Length: 175
Image (cartoon, rainbow, N blue to C red; front, side):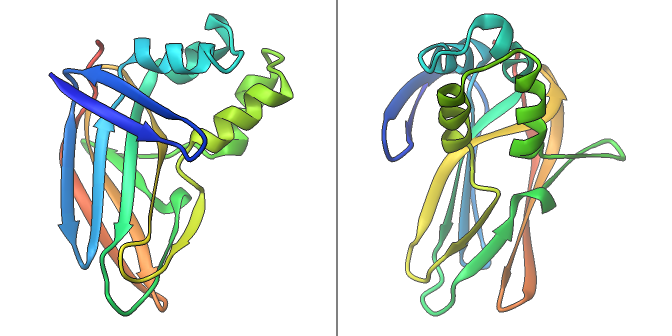
């Protein structure tokens, strides 16, 4: 059993889970990933005025709390979340953008405040982290069904030079 604390700046949520968790450090960057099981995802968003039918498409994907930290002592790092990719066998799956999720949620008539809460809880789509430990945390949905295994590659750059980390055998448990 693991305890995961997600601090989203305006609220802190604690999840207890038996799900996948891993941290990796390479190229002066630390990336951690912790799956949030569907019941916890639904509960989190029910508390933000989603109903079960509205959040169901998101909760049925592989949802994680992720943290990215710049451990470099001299340089800032920059990333675009749209460049992060999950690979299952030979097929690539990109991380859905906030706009793609918004299009899904618009069909179920979510409120403006629910949409804002959703967007703020997600890992930013683009970010610059300054040297010496600047970091952020947020939720990330890999658009694969529950029960999937995959590799996740995150990409960032330092002064335009690309770097990447791949976490192999990421698990997405059903409960």
